[in-house]
Length: 358
Image (cartoon, rainbow, N blue to C red; front, side):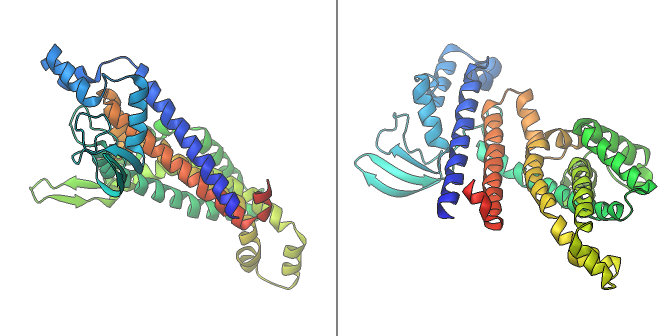
């Protein structure tokens, strides 16, 4: 088991290294000078050269790449003596703890440094630490909504697979998979917050925290979570319904279920005690993958509902060519995808030993 876990972690690190490398060189070939973006109309030659030196843009590309890897890693090697060095251990940039020092070199463990925003000058890590919890909350509520409602609906239509309700739910599920998230967000906001707003009391836009109009500070607005969570959860809900139905129908046709029915057990007990727990394996597998996808796919939904998560941060950064924030956002999403995939693979190996041999 230890070798299996080690392989999965190694593969995950290699994938993340590939993503980091691709992102770095992709943004390097994009048009635009970061120094001029930061200075705007105040840009003159001396100021541009000073900013380029501060950002290390006057260095060879490979040196910039090595420094970027050094900055985003949790353990890194720095020069703590020469402030002119590109690898200087700047206390204003890094939050770190020293591990060992040899001469003028220091090995430290630190928070990854993702640079500073071209627009606000704030650390990218600070911007993301404010936005990511909201995206995580939205994705978590969406996947829970999809899981509980999807399993319930899947059980209901599997008990009467040829009824009109079953056909309606299957059609709805097919539509839920096919409809784009951006269109679904606009449609749901228009129907439930604009047309039916007087009855639902829901807002078309708004984040988890809002500012009080009377100057009494921020307050939490739970109702703003309803529509984006439903919108983001529609596609996994459709998948869960179909998987639950097909898996449960397969289990209900097996011999041990017929034996349970022959003993006089009620339909409710047969389904909950015997059938459902054997039918949920593919559902759990699908949900684990969808949760990672929701973290990355919340961009359009957040933008439509003005939910102040990673999605809004990415769109605003693209609008202003704020490359460090975009790169940091993509890296954060990539880390979450890699980590979640590693966790899922390890869980598979624990549940089914045959997976560890493949």
